[in-house]
Image 1 (cartoon, rainbow, N blue to C red):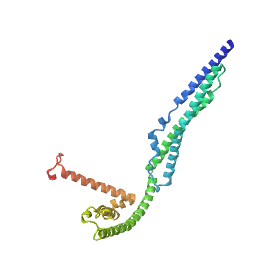
Image 2: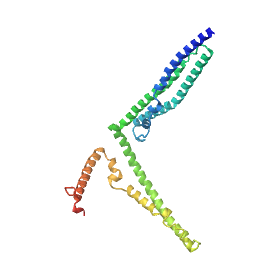
Image 3: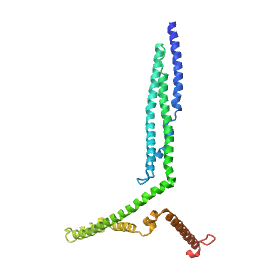
Image 4: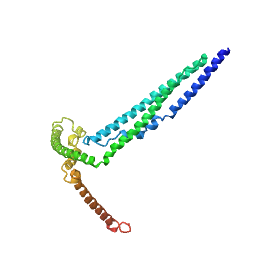
Length: 288
């Protein structure tokens, strides 16, 4: 009996020591930063809303691809965390069961500290990896945004867009001319078809005709004609500011024209204010 008691005391002492080691190891997971504190909603926005298009110099696509790679890595690490946390919890639970069994049998508890430490170390490693990935993502997004301050990049980008815009504007004008002609011809056919179908050939009571109001509807609606007029005015726009011609000019011309235009508009606004207000700020009688 005395021998059994000694063995029990020995087992308990090993168990207490193991519990202390496990308790210390548990602090690792508690000290590891949770993914939601690292991979925040604000940080997740870094991987969204690219500003470049297919005409941008290749460096923009390359830098954005790097952003996307790191963005994907962050999501993968976030998803990995619950798996590692569950594994650590299972290992810890199994260790407790093993120690409890050792106490019950009065034998030395098995060594589980290393396995538990490894599980928690993987969990903490995931947290650290996510933190590093987020920092890398921030740097990658900053490098991508830095292109917006690179005048050489912007000039090359603009040159490509100018060429494509001019070509696209020509294609749009040609396509509209063809489409407008087809639409107007269809409208005329519709009006003729309406007159023939809903006229003398319509064999229904006179009082029922008033409920079949198709004139001015469908292909004959005024809004369709108005829409064509709006597009036609834009396609044939002569004002360089409204047609886009101003935006395609060499930058030195754009700068000169912009300054001149801004000064002219400011002078007109100042004159307008003088015509509406007296020097003391009271509305002038000239406004009445």
